[in-house]
Picture (tube, rainbow, N blue to C red):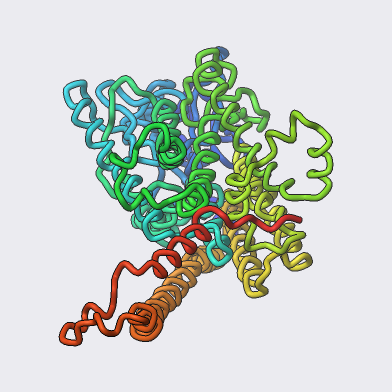
Length: 589
């Protein structure tokens, strides 16, 4: 039987060589299939049909002047992928670099190295995280800009007003861990790993729908509100991908700029007389009240968004050869730029580094304030002392640190530093990225268990559970990506992907439960407030208002027995406003 199998295999191999000749389907690229380059499993070829197979999420082509064939990681949505398998089948009629590049990029209306450029007549969509190239012309530019303002900046303004009016606090303990999870899972710890994880084994052609099902709602906490829900549209045909990414700095900073502007108006009220132009609902606010809470909330939401944009501008893609030696570093989202290109360094890299300095500065303050040894040093240096946080800034810092114990307030800075470190890991090859992420999650779990930084015990358990969830998702992603480059156990792969999917949506259950609890609490509080006001107005107020003047009270009109503008109530409201909007000082260590 073995002899018959051997003879049959020999006949099939002979027939295939007669039909296809020597395995030179891409003559300029390599020899026959016997010496077919492996590229570490990223690029290989079928030993019988001579078809070239490219692992999903990668690009192959010419980067250097020597014309050497290199493989590099391709941004999700840029290069063609196999929606039902692990490898992209490259047809045998690929006889040149240009035809190969057309095959890899044409389906997304792209071209060039890493499919980093949009084809003529197309431009990057401003509201697409996957960098869709859409039809674009100069005639629609003005209309698209108006559409962009309405779709992005108006919702941000509405969210700003809601946070101000309803005094929504996003920096308190119960939401700390959920916001961190939402921001991380929609950016750095994505379970599809930029297309490298074979989610299509489970979801097939619905992989994109599944990814959007968790990325879009979680992205709300990255200030990416409704852009992904709208059809992709461009702003200008002359904008490239890096221009579109850099433009998102304005989106991330827009709410913070508004709050700073309102604060400056309120501070300068005595000089500019702005009460006449500010809405009445804003005239009662002080720097220590809702504006500080809103400022802190938007710092929390904008911070991760700024980290994300900066990372996208700085992330390289390392192209490697047949021996898996890295040959060239190119810009991940704009492949026609090398990492040392003068235009790229001047217009994108340098501004991104400046933003990085600002991002590092914020957690450093939270890590060191307030601490006794820092205050002792500052008190001895006069020129530093005057820049040390004032009362208003101290209140702002307290909104981040107030939920932690007095000797653990630096944890607010550690949580922001974690975001920076996760985005730093994003720069690295995927193996090192996943390793760094796993180490970080385990370290933070250890810190939470051993130090118990929160004042309330249940918050320590909540954050520990959330970090454990992230560690499990990251570990499962490591397995799925690794298995995708070998011959995987399909059953184990499917089980891991399904388990990952469940873990990703678990925090939604917590958020719904928390919101229901919070709404119920507010409802009962509102009822108690109404009862208190009724009791207050019918006993204490009536007694104070009628004392010494019963003879003047018209008994036929009971409404006059409940004066609205009572001096005592005005004094109480005034004292409540002073407590809420500016006189509360943070606890000092």
